[in-house]
Image (cartoon, rainbow, N blue to C red; front, side):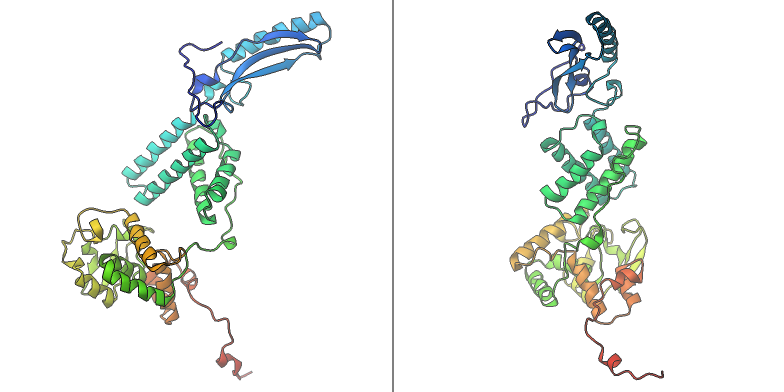
Length: 402
């Protein structure tokens, strides 16, 4: 039996047995059950659509436990009547849910995308948060297309999440931190599905992140002689990008924050830069010190002569009215890295780590470094401090009062 208005689902190019987002109607396909007998005994046979395989699949129910041919046939008629009613009401033997409750997974993903777009438009999500979630969804779609055709929400289960994380970590060869980021996305997405009533519980419950103790940062501090080479190269080839490097190295301004800074946020007289709470990661308005070296270079390349409401970085990293994507900084850094043949572990953001470490090495007060880096505690600042691994001569010769 086939429901009215049902059109045959399109076949996937990778596997002719799998349909491509076939919809709920596909799962309601079935052939009426019939009773059959052979040398081994009696059985009921019918076919129903299997969403996992994307095709009709034969189902048999053996009746040999019913003794006597007459009793078996009478029992079979009752079972066939009950099965037919269940199938007509949307039951499918290959899935746990009644098909009347089935929800197409792709439709739910589209609703989630509409949700995060609304959160961005309403100001609840920052642009980078929105971009991150969109990227995660894109890779999840890629996984579904290549590895695990998924048609209905019930198929988004713990097995799906575990296999998807393995796909990100192993097959896509991403680091442990990236794998943990995807786990966080799956938790958020699972919460959305539960909140909207698409699932009863989160399939991510019980899936653990990889401990930070088991992996190191994918970026490294840059040796100071290499930092000097970068400065020399940028001064000649990438003068506007060098100002971004200065802000990251000396003021520890995040790339995303740089794209939002305007000329009016700089106070040259007081040598300060104020990052408003609506522009910063921690949502706090904070002021950092502008070294004279940074101010002088900004004056030299004409940053502070632009209108007060201009972004300091716009088209071609020059001041302008248009806000740019942080990706522009990474693109310029890739140009520098290739030109100087720098290690891939030396990333643009490594300049921040290196700048904080140099301040600590120069024995600047920990509180001053903490405030400049806008760390929430001295414990975070202490991570960047190099601790001695050799004996201290003063302590070796110490002869105290005891």
